[in-house]
Image (tube, rainbow, N blue to C red; front, top):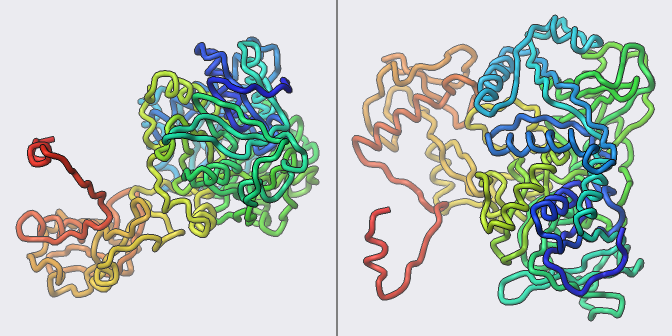
Length: 568
């Protein structure tokens, strides 16, 4: 690694994990050679090194799938290009289902994958056992097989990308802590750094303590600054007034002692109904979990020197995943465990990572908060962010990860601590249509909120605002007080009656939800008749909408009337 700090460069990348190394690799590959990457400790020492190394291609959108597909293709050829082994093995992945709803979701996934260009095949429980012989399949209804998925050694991928970037001219410098992002006239124009060991480990930076810059600091001027510092990114961004809402969560997996029948080329296995994933590790097994309720790493500030470190094992919190793992893989009943990995990872409020140019400062870009998909997404994220910087705009529809989707409301620490405990588990929860977050609610409320709640509103959340999705019906005989309109036809209100304890039925057999709570389903949910009733009332009579949560624009100037009168 280089050790001499430059005075200026075109791009400064802050953070030497797999994402930062990927960005440096792709910027130099696309022709921007004047790139400096700064790492406060050692490359890959934050979250990258302890990640499980799963590389799945399929995501929830075409754009995110393209990112992961590119990553897999890149990793497969990286050793040949750089001479550095990354441990890539295309072992495939297996997702088993023990519930009918999970089978519905897997069938939908398989159908969607055709459009995304990813091979997914539905197979029987017996075929799943052929691919993963140690599985118990008594309760398995079926499975999905994704033959193109694989696994890597995350640290080695980061180092290979770093090596590729260096070969093309990038400078990668370790043991340099960035104290602040410099800016002028609304644009980032460099960083102030220190190589002083006492400053790197100091729990309060010079800026936080209000001290003047010391002789141990150095300024690097740059056209572009990119924050790829993982769980350190939020705090560094705050120092220059930029919102990057992410927070670290404790994430666990265990590695067994050698088990008879286990081998390294076993597929990556997932049992989302039991919140588990598993794969081969030599002749042992890695067993990990995405629990529905996780534990935020409750630190006021992520220590600067937290490098190649883990948190204490939490066997008590891991008791349920371990019990489920022993059910799904009976060989775990009698094995010993060689290692408990409890590492912090950063998560965002909506379970999508954060990428792009910040609204607060021009030429300041971010790629962070990867929600446990950082290894699988890093290759593509580096490519598409590099293209974004070079072209001046995204070359792919990246709105779902664009940093501009968040405002300052999302950076509330108490909100983040609560929300991220739910977000981690969403990876394996059923992907219900119209699912609403349960944590971090009530952050922003309309002045009419209490009146709407009294009227039976079932609230959803958009941009932090509590907004009515629909209204419950308390009286099966009278029309809803907000509408005063005849009931819709039975066809408009048909739904699944079975299992619905909080619903009313009118004289023409329409099922209404009488409590303001959602009962999730892949078919019509319990609020369908309520929604149809409100829709018809709005179309044929009069309705009042609370638009507090919508954006407001102030248009000023001599041609204002003409400008706002033009149809869009």
